[in-house]
Image (cartoon, rainbow, N blue to C red):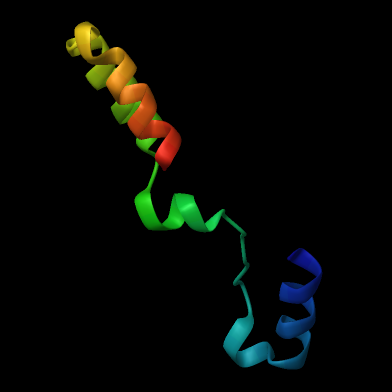
Length: 59
């Protein structure tokens, strides 16, 4: 990604100067970081831990 960003910055110095690019998994982009939320919910509702685990695996 850095190589592509640098080449674009060279080709279009007025538009792309000082910009970069990062790659994130599509799942994370669409649903966000749900791990932390699931863990917090599992602590609040320990009796539903198995159900939450099953839901998390579907994501």
